[in-house]
Image (tube, rainbow, N blue to C red; front, side, top):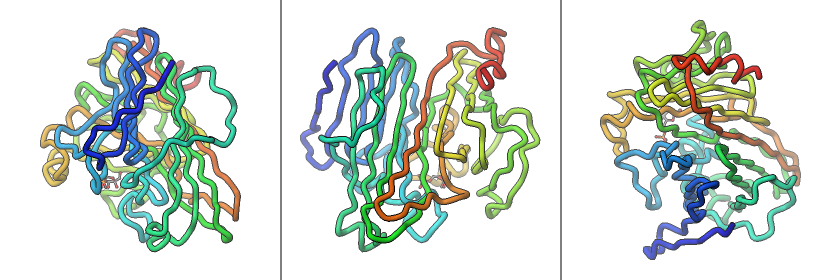
Length: 307
Ligand code: TA6
């Protein structure tokens, strides 16, 4: 299995990594710009990730779709730019990734982002952010690691923002977050407790769910497909859909795009991650597809969530 590096020749977009199409392995595209996965397809070549119809794939903008990395700050939970700067930086191939347990899949790639003189002006802490991406049949695993290469301790918040492609968001259910507390970003981050037995969507939602279980199911009735998000080292989860008014207000978001996307992120927000000098933090998330849904009666969300 070989990876190919494609440079789009404009030079300003950095390079693509594309795994050659293989019946067993899924199509997959990651940009060095933002260290961002922008496409993941299943063996029916259906795109599983959302990309805005108005996305701009050029610096300095962040790319509205795929899986951007929010670091060293999530949202406006701090003094830095919204969602930090990692998503607006050119990452590199990590030619000598520090060891990780071998993955069963032979389709993995390692990316790295190191703090630059420029970064140190806005966030005076030196770091190395590594991202291992592993592709396996029906599964996409991301393993981020942050090493504090500074002489002082620092803390950060973090998220892997999963822009998921859905058939019709008003028909989607998210299970696994019931009864949890959450910060509502639409209500000045006031804290509430989820009363519903599943999250459904009929308007803008922008919430940070706190200390969630490690499994969350995103059930797409129409596509008879459930996406299962498993995560570790990332206690929180963000659920976001801008709905119509916010979609119109976002320049890089198509007016109707909100109908076919949902963000369900793995995150560390409520309790920032503290790293002493030369310490390293590791998190992980795995997205996998289960091809059935409630109405087929074949899928019992409880089985998905609780095994
Ligand atoms: O999910 C949280 C959030 O901060 C929302 O409030 C909304 O602004 C969204 O992220 C999009 O942020 P972005 O900077 O990508 O436009």
